[in-house]
Amino acid sequence: MKKGNVLTLTTPGIFQKVKRGTFELLKGKVMPVMLCKLTVPIANSSGGAVALSAAERKTLLSLFILTLTHGRNGHRKPFNALPLDKMRQLGRFAVGQDVAGWDNTSTGLARSLPNGQTTAVEFWSLIPTGMLHQLRGGQRVWKGVGRSQASTIEIDLKYSSAAVASGLAISGNVVAEFVPLAQSAKGDRADYFAEYIEVEEKDKVAKLPPGLPLLITELSAAHAASALSSFQLEIDGELIHDNVSAADVLVELEGVNPELTAEASITDEVTVLYAVVPGQEWKDLPTGAPRLEQLKKDLSSVTLGYYYVPIVEEEKVKGDVATFANFRNKPLRAVTLAAIEGLKNPDRLAPFEPFRLLDMDDAEFEKVAGLYAQPGSDSVAESIPPTVLARARAMYNQHLGEGETKSADDIVKQLTRAAPGGVQNARGLGKGLSGTGIQMRGLLLKAR
View 1: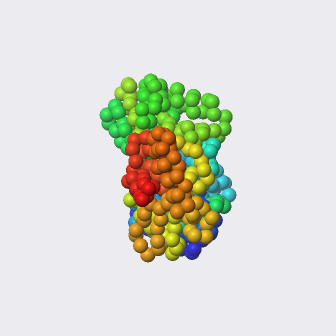
View 2: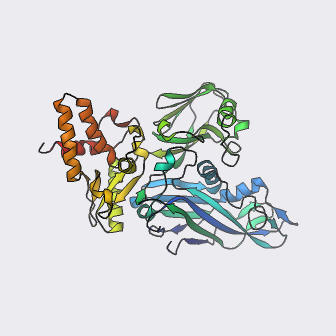
């Protein structure tokens, strides 16, 4: 990794930046998780030696505010001014591990702070960048950020206040070091990983953006203290919960999931309304827009935390592919991983799957359709290699000749699905072709 991934925070309230182009992964590596190591000097003037309580540790984490962007011009912002106490919840959910150093009594957050001294406390915050430990089948497609995408990551970090607790304050420079937790994966991959937003709703009904929901929480109370006694949750019309209480959901989440560890469960922090649970199959995940209705108006105002994979617009995807081609300085064909590996996932999952960036040295470069980009140009176009095109045309014509119009349409859909961003609807291609699909059909029918 390149130097320059270390920030020194000298003053409360001032953002420091890790600039785009700093994060550099080795070839054949992906980053499912980024680690943020913080070394925080804490002065103790309380009158006696103390150790931070659990509540005070959360307060310390909440002082640190992080924004992470990626993609061309930072168009994706998965974490926007997010306090690290909330990042801790996402790390526990997605990675299955707590902040490293949370209970450490030697150098970590639980160490003793002598009176009249300034003591350095160290801990590692986990920033999920593609990992979701719960999924069966998803492990094959979701790996994390590849080297071209990593080059577009930019991070801003600050601490909002020096005060930690009575008699305890940050005193001196805080050092933040960002380290990729890399693992091997074939090829250069890109992954529009999950993003976190919060939505406040004072009506009985709260609606969230469409995508692939991973976690929906209500933020006013830990699960056991939730006031929600009767609510309904749908995802794109699929009924997830019907006239249930928070207590009912807790039984469903934890009572029948022996694989769910205490470290990975965040019901001690928030009320979990929906979560992908250990052992769930990738192909079975619901997609679309969540809708929460309080059948009894227990809460006058509901603040929901929503962790989901968004549907990225076609033009934004093409802009990223152009950026990656310029970074690599070579022609690239961007192809969904499902198309390369022959995975038969439902169309509705296509917007959320990662893709590979193939160059002419890759064996798959001439074997699959996708988006084609030349370095030095922002022009990105749908592309079908000649042999693939000839084979697709022959199959298309054969199906039409035998009156099998649906099978002929499936050829167009397969080509569309191979292109990142080709599916723009959480219900898949059954709702009509995207712009990419129309272009793929045009290439297929040209001079037929």
